Image (cartoon, rainbow, N blue to C red; front, side, top):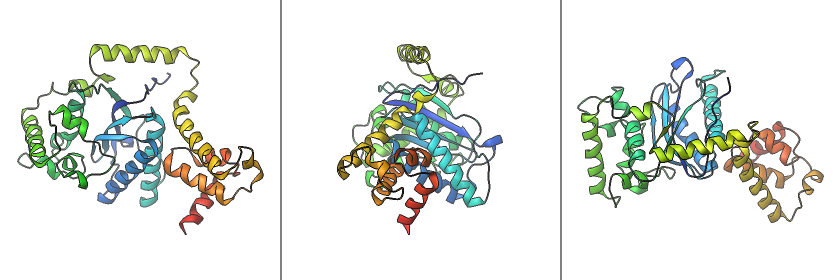
Length: 308
């Protein structure tokens, strides 16, 4: 059976969730959780994602992710693959860490409460799973964006965007009084939560008004109408990478054909490769091919030599 098409467009917001393979844990300790957040920060730097909420649970994670560049698929491939490699390397393991495809619920983000609903769902996960006691505040669960929302702006991760959710709570300022009001509101919802409150988040493929849903269906029909071979999904990420390559070539005063005549480990090629690794999700194989560097191992050696 063919996989369902991932709907991607600039500015799309998703509730992303993925579980461990066979529902096994994906974080063995706090160091693993920090590695995941560090990897997420790198992914945001490469993709320009805005994270509105996150929560790391023992065997799964939740993200509320906005994609200005329509690159959820490329970004998630890099995030999941890179964290898996780092987890396996740290624990001397091999094989899959995550189970199947990640869930990506598309969320309407026009300020009418749907973003608040999905962020509340994510932030209430530790209470729902009894990872915080009934009389314990949600802020005590440190592996969630909720404690970050309650900090002053200078103490939050740069990739965590709080203004959209604050706006849906009716808070115009990010001050101490507003943050206290925010905490009281979510703690109240925690006590009053019912099974029906988040039915739309748990089920279905989109969360929004009927007009929003119809617009997504039309977009999906247009995509299915094309000769879809899967290559369209990486187009946005590849275009971004190509733009960086052209920019670097201009700065070096090179034409595109110059890459063929320069040696594989040329320092200028290594510089471009380093920028591609830092700012995009393109693979070592793609970089090696695009920059005429021979093989992935050549690129890897060039990148490693810079670190020494």
